[in-house]
Length: 294
Image (cartoon, rainbow, N blue to C red; front, side, top):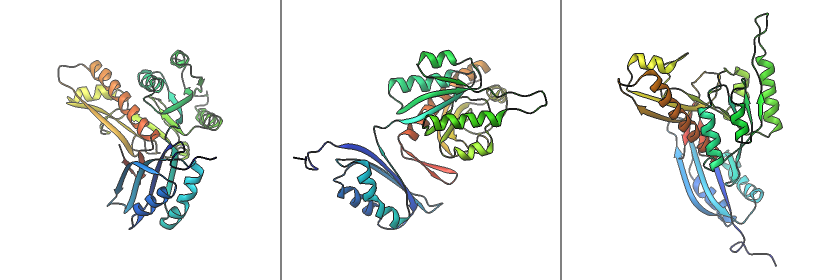
């Protein structure tokens, strides 16, 4: 004898949606979930006055499988021309991490992933250098060396390296690419291919000090705050939609080296926060901005 919906095991799910704002959206969504014996445990919404779009994130439990819930939402999706996402909350986001030589941010990600505070699964780490291979092996994660080199005629192999990266993305069913201090500029084509699915960390809460030695530039200018910005990757370098930002007060008594060390700490925590929000489906794109239901 099958269990009734009220006694069957419950699955926690996450629903996100965006569409042009109009009356009746919340009522229609709630009604669809109720038809699946859904119990809403968290609901957040935002009406963007700039774009006229409506955004919503709902956590709920239901005895029904994901496919049945998705079918129940189909009429609402069509009625309001929605963009809908639906996931089981326990499912971890498959994430490829890219790095170069600086291991602080990579270690923050790997440590939190192992500790269970980041809901991601990292099947592979990709780097254009070999320095961080021992760290990857310490955490038991395969490490793939994809060098970007310059040939004698002045050309480089960036196109081949990016093709190899996309092969790895397909091979490992990657849903998110994280640039953990990966010191190579991605091509415009690759940025567009990974649109909304690649996160980078920038060394300032405002793009004031670009280029080499940003913390030294900040020290020379006598800044009183340093910080970090995690954002989605776009062809506009370091100017993609912002997900998370943090700042750290500094003083005249600290050296440029102190700035670097403090900056690296802020970068790691900011990137981990952005990755967690993305993996928990708390970030929705609103043009060049993000809506973050933290």
